[in-house]
Image (tube, rainbow, N blue to C red):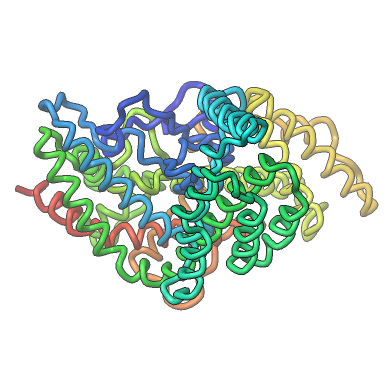
Length: 517
């Protein structure tokens, strides 16, 4: 990744104006930062929201960015085309997320502090509950808002029922008879607490054990507004629980069907884009073309040599290696849009762990026999370097590496003294510090130690992708310190690649075949 800013290697990876995500955007698209060190949710584009529920796509994958706009000006598109494409993308993204993210679950929608959304939400809700309070303070009591709440509560309870809950359904229908309730309210014979306690009791029979304490606390509420407010908030939580339970039960089925489903939805999306004058695979073609050129010019990522030459498989595998050196000058492929943030997280973690390896290998090579075999020192160096690498938000990359150099020298000297050996002299200390700082003075891939480690890792990945290895795999030499970490992210990367090839392999084959025509 070519970048003249010394700190940008770790501060920010390219904001990707992805054509596959922006055809729909009716508001400014969210940034998709590809930060080299940060993987926090706050860095991720916002997840779609539906009915007050946050849909966490990928640690956040976003479907509201540039998913559907081409670099070239499209023809005018109709509102119907926009809506059809929007629904297609949302459904495809949700199915994809459930399938590939084992930790996927719906979350309660939390608005950002001081945001306009939060202000509007709080104002509207406060006004509603104030109106309810005023209704109960009137003589005679007015039940207009209470009737609305009971209707919504009944609907929510019905939504929690399974098909076999026949008696529950009949009981709720009988007790929460809205016509009877309306008659009681009109005649001033309505007892809100009887109905509230029935709803609470019904919730207690339908809820997960984790909600028992919350529901039990509702029984002690006397004031009608607080009681109804507590009931509605709890029902929202139960709806989330039911949705997540359903996802958990359906995940095996979804995983069996998701490849065919995504293929179908993506084809529909391409057809919608074509009608709007958009090439829905433009960035994907460019991505694969770059891979073909690198192989032809012997400039592959990690200098890997493909034994079989420029085959479709080699081109596709080389294209996926670009995830580890992505340039902000390129637009992310449409076929990878759903996993852009996941690939970014893998990129971030890989780079961090290879930097750790580069520094630790440099230390043990320079200091030599004095610290050979000191596994405790290796672990301390790893832990401290990873902690200091998190300072990238508050300092420059060069300054951060200077701090790492000083800490590495301190830890090394402490280990030497502990084992009865002499500390590093000034010449060795300065040399070691300069070698560490050298990682920040130019592109990481120009640093000899990092470049070697990265090339070995790429070769390791390529051999797995081309099935040149059989049985258990072991990381290349020089990476044993982060073996568990790198094997974990390698597994994530390979799963994404395999899944992506299964879904979009036909498109890749057609694009590559067209290169020779």
